[in-house]
Image (cartoon, rainbow, N blue to C red):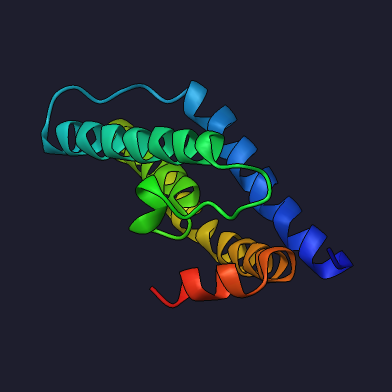
Length: 133
């Protein structure tokens, strides 16, 4: 990982940790459409994250993860996390949380790109073929 990559990944991590700390003091806004929409999105994000962890755990170390939720999404763990963070902003009716969650997708995109480069180096043609799906 280059210095630039490490810095951008660190920015995403700091934004995520800051977002988690910030939400501790935000009241939940009951009820309303944003509350219920946020809960549905949160559950969806949680399910996607759990499915990605299960698929990852079932895959041997010498193979890329290509089964389960990874058949549908190349980066379901990121997707589940972003959906969960956005949903927290909706549940709390705090647009700053939604904005930070969306803005943190930018360094997350670069992290995913660098992760894919590493996976191509590690697994070669097997991962390249998986990306073509």
